[in-house]
Length: 138
Image (cartoon, rainbow, N blue to C red; front, side, top):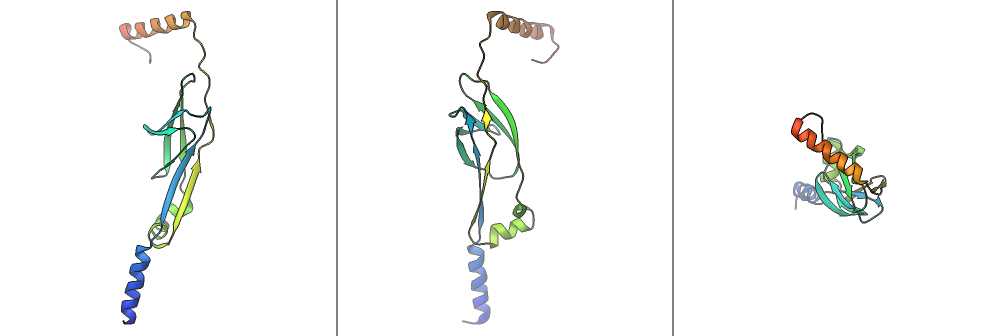
């Protein structure tokens, strides 16, 4: 075997043993066992840990019977090794797996308060008036 062949085999092995980045996000709620929806996709009941593909903005909705629905927003900024051209080296040439585990701050749900009959009738009348006469947002 020549030196050139050895170098080529070494480079092929290096490329085939390339690394990867494993990205996970963890969401916890108070109380637990709430349905978690991220970017319009159900990811499970809290506490929940799931994989994500990109960094950036995420819309999070949390629902549980007896509690107000929580709609929030969370931004995941990329680590230094995920900017071009460094990301190419990390994800293709470095052997092994890099784990990037992110945790969203605790999301606290508020109990649903009982509404009086007067409040329900008043809201129904407002909705009817908007539907019939227009104006205002729902």
